[in-house]
Length: 297
Image (cartoon, rainbow, N blue to C red):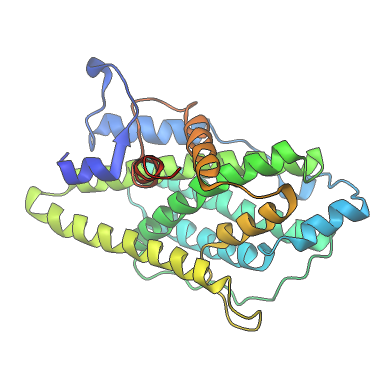
């Protein structure tokens, strides 16, 4: 891998003689086996939703994320499922199809939760099937890398503060862990695709990938700026993690930038720790946050 590629995906420390050759058949096998074998089977329809007291119910209703979360998860499910249907490699197809199933399960859980607790969400049209499933999955996956890093920290705050009943916390803890598996898959899948391309084609791949990453960063920045707009204005679909941060801060008190970012780093490492150390880890947000912490008081 080139230095540019290594800056996008940083491998977890492993012994030199056990490193995977990125783009090799063994890399693909380890990635797909790890993803499939760590799948947790359950059916959303079998979830036993707890009865909530008025205070807990009010907390759920107050989170300004449900409408965007329902829409985003449904759209993501269609994007990933489409790639799973089109992927010719049987190992990758199995893993990607499983991820598409999990994304669809996330959407089903959110629909059931909002219906069970009468949280109002808008009716959305069926998501469009992407024309270029590969690059749509890559762009969506890097968006998940950005969102999940901060979501891990936010979820830890909510869990420690006992903002919600334990059954709700346990349910979303599993969803958070699935997101960790998803971002592990995306960075390795992207690196695998790049390595399988001929050398002359890799710069174009790197440029297109960088453009997709930049687009996701812009979406999140736009979402953050939209938080200050009037409620009647249309919000961006991405970046509802930012809105959660505001809501959590209102309930648990001010969160310093340093303490929050340090928590996100720790939770990101913890969430990814159970998986094969030879696989690449996300290498965009964590290094940038570490750099920022050198100047944040």
